[in-house]
Image (tube, rainbow, N blue to C red; front, top):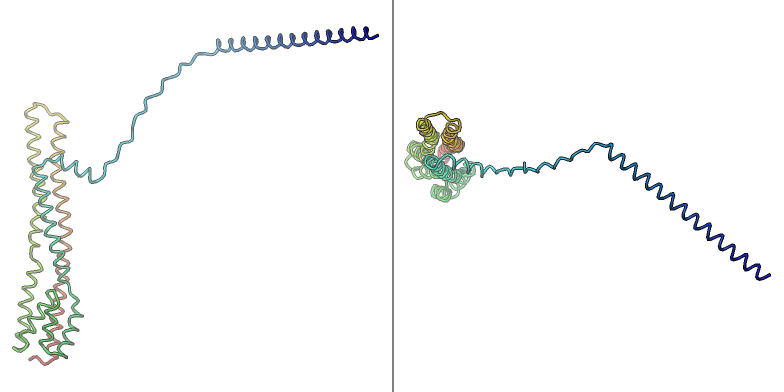
Length: 277
């Protein structure tokens, strides 16, 4: 019995192993068939698909240019204009600005609060008399205080003398306020004239180059005209800058002059009120 069972078990294992081997062989055969079919399909597709040649990538060009600042552009154009006339125009600008700055500082220091000064003089006349009022004028800067001092210094000679003294010394102060402004007007007129002269000389040089070359070359003519016109441009820029400062200075002088005249009239009235004859 045991022998029969052992034989049956051996036959079962053999049969099971045979089935497994057959199944594995069948799976391998199916897989090989599928792979072969896929490979054949891919080959046929590759054969029927047209070959497209890929274009090489275009070289990347650096199109971004560094933007030049206004200072750099101005410097470059100044150098292109030539050192002869451009240097002269620059000197005119420096001298004109020097006179403008000097006048601005002087006029700002000459500005005085006339109403406050008149109040101080009136208080000094009431408390300490003419000498106290003159001391107030000596301790106050500006043309208005100087005119007041000249009028108070002649108070004992009568109101008519005081008035004449104020008018005369007012003219002197007007001359001090307007001093050196005439130089600014000279530089305003000189800058564009120098620019025009540089343009004319540059045009003459351009025509000389054309004559020497024997032919009108656009690049030759354009370069010469460009250099010639740069002097005019810089001359006009200098004149515009100085003209702005000049107008400011004239307005400042007019304002101080009006305050001087009003304050002088108020001083005469104040002296008459305090007994000047």
